Image 1 (tube, rainbow, N blue to C red):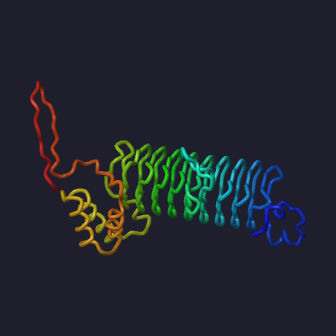
Image 2 (tube, one colour):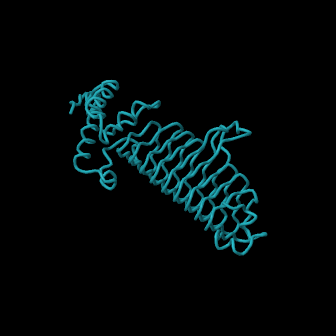
Image 3 (spheres, rainbow, N blue to C red):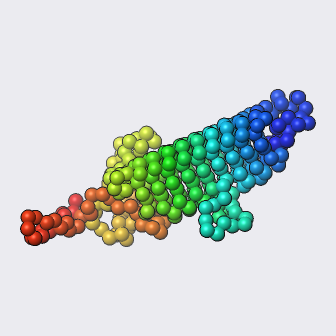
Length: 303
């Protein structure tokens, strides 16, 4: 790392530019106390505050703001108007908030916002190889894994966790403290108020589970046997008619390893419950009204 004053060319011997080539636009404002890696490009009207670390090969386009308490790893691309490290949106904004820790090779498209954690010893964390599209918002204390895709206008409330390779559709909103599991897919405009288990698909219209994310699992390298195991575990979760504790016990007993083992681990850690399936549960009673005032009931068989 080199300091920002040297990166701007002040008192930097010419030979050092060959070792640490950094491009900072003259209309950018970079605090001298910021730590800037090699091969970094900072565009016009960008602001980089003190207590910021920017890793090698990062690109900040125009009007980007990297606020105090933010660390970027290597080869991140931050597009126009994005603000990383803003104060948490809270009625009691702390005097000493936490940090934002960002891994490598992430892309933050235009106007993305990421906020610092509420407490000094905590951090909002974004892993590696994630794509956050236009106007996406990551609130304080969120944790994003790796290879996740967050589409335009997605809203993540505070303390949300997003697993590896999850996909969040445009304008979907996730309530604070909810978790999105590994390889889960959330449809556009869904409103998530409970945990979304790994490997499932949530319909954007109903905000309910509609099956497995088989396409995403295949793209992630899951073979036929692994997909078959997930289908069996899905039936236990959503179509067995068992109580919650009975379902957990059966998942633990029948799927001790393989990808389905993640379902038991995920569900035992829930505090908000799991998102329901759109299909009515086995044994449910549906009421419907015929001509006149007569009301009939149909009980759905298990299976």
